[in-house]
Length: 447
Image 1: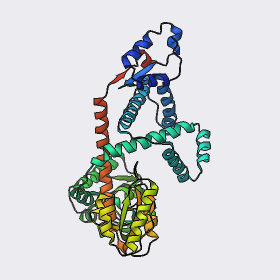
Image 2: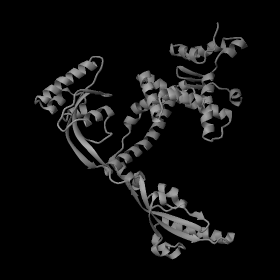
Image 3: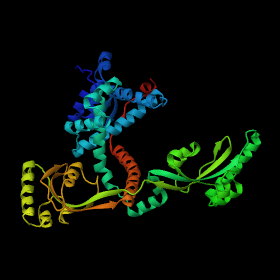
Image 4: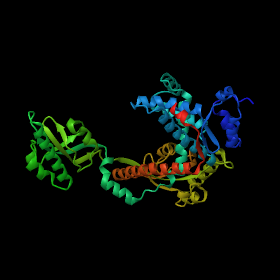
């Protein structure tokens, strides 16, 4: 029996065609000669009915090493690196299997579109991206397949994990109270300053006494002591008489000693002690200013959606919507027709009403068609990723959405935190429910 060295292709084809893993392993043990065993691409892990072979692991490691080196990280021992990379490969394989089970796929057209967008964001054409990657030692095909994998896992996780994440209004309120100012893009900060001076000729003992005094003051301030009172009593700074108030600074003008803190500390927060040639400093972010109100044009709109499927073609959907548009322009009630014909069940119950829509709330195709309409005008049928639409603009207004924007950012921040934890739990469940066998012996790991 001849077994050719064709990387993982033969193994995975046999496994996916229904050959039991145990029989595949037995098959490898029957290849008696040493020459045949050398030809065989050895299995390093079994993942349900699939396998990961040594050449796949080696290839993945070769892709990871440059990334680690570029980031300045020290490479772990070879056995540790193999284990870490193999664990990631197993998680990827489990997600691919789950996506196959659910019928989730990334077709070549979607992948090419994504690759074109990546190139465009970097100011180049797709052909230029190919040349740039190859010149940097990255195979275009590796980058393409990695992009496909990222799209696949994102779509899978959105369907299986993200849709179940709920963020309550109470959670948003608590976040805004504790961390709301972190969501504002700061333009100015008001600083308060307390200095425990140390002369350039001070002894080590004097420096240590000053350090301990500054640390004790920080403890008092964080315990609720009034900054202005302590500054007047203890500070050696020029503004001690004013309670340490340094006033407002534009972000570009913040003193270099506290530049980073001015961007990251919360309003009211007390810094750790900061050392400079003049002594030990304590900073309080007294107040912050952010970007001004977000004034946007909102549109009150309603629509009718026809989704395409095996029965309803693009031509069918366009024709139906054209007929409905003629009836609406002729005087039929839009809301009544939306309730009867729209496939968007959420808005159909409300006569197609989408409420007030801000820029970015809808997909680009919808926003473009809606934006071209005058008030009360009904669009021609147009296609989006959801299907075919007609839309009518009921009203427009200019609206200060600063508060809404902060709430949206807070909700997104909470959702991201919950998503990280939810994805980890979901991946652990996939692992717990899977058959996984690691087939790297100690000799391989040590080698």
